[in-house]
Structures are given as C-alpha cells and as structure tokens.
Length: 94
Ligand SMILES: [Zn+2]
Image (tube, rainbow, N blue to C red; front, side, top):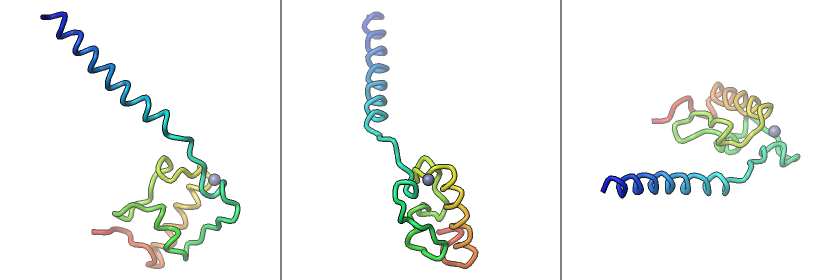
C-alpha cells in the first residue's frame, strides 16, 4: 500500500512537470514590437496604440507581457505616462 501511494505521488509530480515543460517549449521567443517593425513609431498621442501596452485596469504591462526590449519598454512607459498626463489614457480604471 505504502509503495503504491509513493508511486502515485511520483506520477503526480511527473505529470506536473510534463504539463509545465511543453508550455515553455511552445512559447516562442517574443520579438520586440518596435525592433521587429521598423515602421512602428511610438506616439504618446496615439491612444489606440498605447492601449496595447496597458491592462484592463490601466496599468502598464510588464516586459514579459509586451515582449519589448529594455530600451523600448522604457519608451513605452514614458509614452503611457505622458498620455495619462494629458488625459488620453486613464491612471486607473474601475
Ligand atoms: Zn526594442
């Protein structure tokens, strides 16, 4: 009985690992939206463009979500903050 329980535990752990690993394998390396597209010009007056970089609460998305490189993430952050200041984007939603 004890052996069976141990085996089940081991299998459960294996399954968790098997669930995790394929997920990571499927995720392709994100290319920075601005490095990938040379015609992409970030504009703090363009609310539609900046909405892609904020979540439904109005918070600026982290780099792991936007896929932007460090340089461009800083520009995104600055643009969103400027847009908030001129009331194009909300500081908070709900
Ligand atoms: Zn970039």
